[in-house]
Length: 399
Image (cartoon, rainbow, N blue to C red; front, side):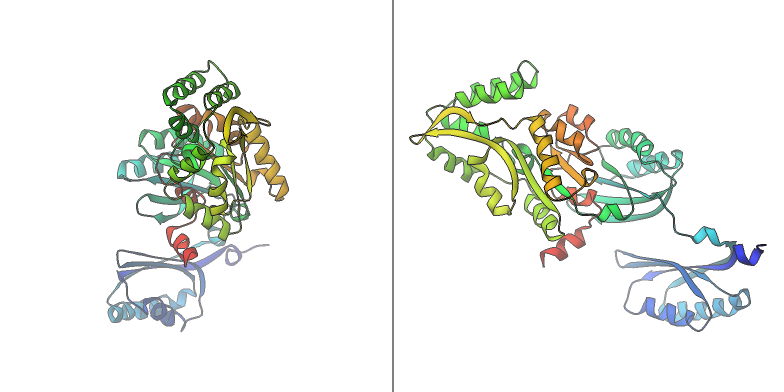
C-alpha cells in the first residue's frame, strides 16, 4: 500500500536573478551543498548581461528555515535577488515528459503580437510550454518552443495560419532522439541553392531571354508541363558556343547562407544532396566546391563546341526529384522520415511531399501550401534553426 511519502515530496523552487558575473552558480550550489537535498531540475540563461537561474530541489521540511537564511546571506554577498517557494508536490510532477513537440519560429522582425497569438494557439491546443530558447538573433530572430501535451499535426494546423498572418516562418516537429538522427538534406538549385535561374543566364547569352521567359510563364500557367517547357527552352539555345557555359558559371551567385548550411550539415555528419531541373554542365564546379557527392541534373547536348539544343538522357522533373530523394536515402541507410527537401517551385512539389520535412524556400504560394514549413527569409542557413541548431553552435563548427 502506497503512502503520501511514496507519492509526494517536499520541494523548494529557487529563483536567482541579477547582473551576471563569474562564480554565481558555484556560490549558490556551495550554499546548498551543506544540506541533504536533491537537485530535481535546473535552468540558467543570460540575456544582455542579466542572469536568471532557477533550481528545483527536494529537501527535508525541517531544513527550510536554515536554507532560506543561508540563501538570503548568499544573495547579499553576490548582490543578486533570490526568491524561494517551498511546497509539497507529487513526485510525478517532476518526472520526464514524453512526446514533446518542438516549434521554431523565425522572422527578421519578431513582434510581441506574433508571440502572443502563437502562445495563445499553443494553449488552446492543450499544449504547455516547457522551455523557450533563442536560437539566433541576427539577421533572423529564431526562437524555439518545447511543448508537452501537444499533438504535432493538430498543433501545426492551428499555428501555421497564425504564423502566416503575422509574417512569421514556423516549423512544428516531433522531439525525442530522432530529432538528432542523421539526415539527408536535398536541395533544389535554381532560386534555392543559387540566386539565379541557370537557363535564363544561358538564354541571355544566346539572345533569347524573352522567348525563354515566355515559355517559362506558359509552364507556370499549366499550359505545358515541365518536360515540354524544358525541351522548348533548350531548343532555343541551339548553336550557343560551349564557352558560354563557363561564362555563366562565373555569374552564378550562391544564396546567402548556402555555404554555411552545407558545411555545417557535413560537419554534423548529415548527407547533402542536390537535384536540379537545370544542367550538370553548369553546376558541376559548384558541387565540387561545396563537396556535394549526391546529385542529379539534366545534361545539355554538345557537338563540335556548340549546344545542340537537346537534353541528353531522362529529364529531371518533379517525379525524378522525388525518386532521387528515395534513392539517396536508401544509399545512405537513412529513413525517409529523416529526409528534408528544400525547394521553391512546382517541380519540387513531389520531393517536398515525400520528405520527412518539406521546406518551401521563398516559394510560390502553391509550394508553401504543400510544404511542412516555409522560409520567407533570403538566408538559406535559416534551415539550421528549424533543426534546433543555434547560431552559437554553427559558429563553433566554423572554428
